[in-house]
Length: 149
Image 1 (tube, one colour):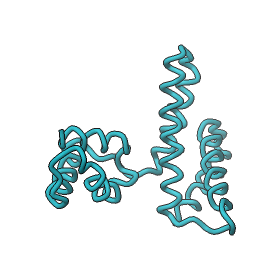
Image 2 (spheres, one colour; image 1 turned 180 degrees about the vertical axis):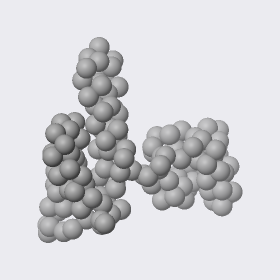
Image 3 (tube, one colour; image 1 turned 30 degrees about the vertical axis):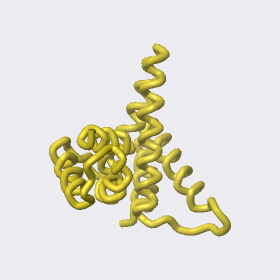
Image 4 (cartoon, helix red, strand yellow; image 1 turned 90 degrees about the vertical axis):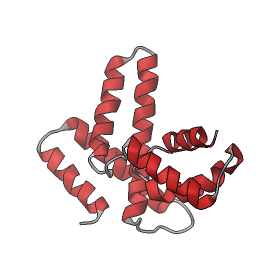
């Protein structure tokens, strides 16, 4: 089943179950997907990879909002954002562990011949497609920077 169809099916199930957080989160995700579909000159159907990118972006927004609310002392809003993030995490691929990420970065450094911090771009170009959706970009770039310093 396509990812968007799965989201719509799960939205219907959460509405029947009266699961308010899941319903609101899936509506938000489907709205973001629809917005992406109609952006640009012509409307189009997103592929599963493109839908996944939208979900990753939305999950990142939830994490950042939760941190901001925590910093402002708004724990109830932070908890809501985290709950929404957990709903989105159900549709994202499993995150890479530190060992797996280090292995991928080591291989990319060896393949690109990188030796200094100036070569970060070349390494990121090789690593990014391999970790898409499975690791936060900042986490990846920080590790590449650490390895090349």
